[in-house]
Image 1 (cartoon, one colour):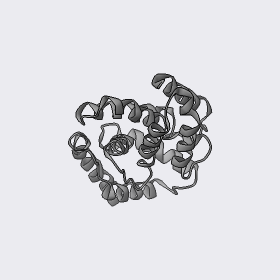
Image 2 (tube, rainbow, N blue to C red; image 1 turned 120 degrees about the horizontal axis):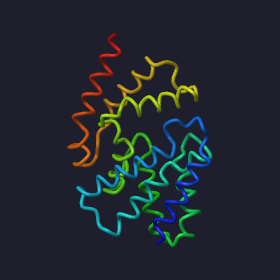
Image 3 (tube, rainbow, N blue to C red; image 1 turned 90 degrees about the horizontal axis):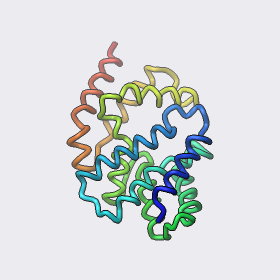
Length: 193
């Protein structure tokens, strides 16, 4: 597998071709998820053979936004199935990558440990210090698309999401859960005002 070449190909396409109104689902988000996967890999005892597949899934997980917003994960898999054979990935590896990509679809329900890692990496920001900065980019994106009506509506959507979300991996729970709970308290305080 030409791992680095495949990932560079899709990152270049995302940088060049994603719509400008994707303030959150852009190449910065993709590289953020890639970096979060690398952090989780250190603690989650992943086989060396699976590391490149997981990192490829991280790079391709939002490629579907190149053509559509809703159900973009399915399109991400189509893109992976089209592109990755040219970089030496076999059918079995691509099936694994697509399984991981589909694990990021909301509501998340990963089928295996690798899917759990990618799902947790995709929402890593929920429990980080930069949560409100990142969250604001998602608000701007959803507001521009007409999916969110106001900041108050957005805060309630986030509260509802936080209350239904759980990290899957032990590492994500240990690294992110406490800060995530602090963010939920702050969101609830905003609603009370």
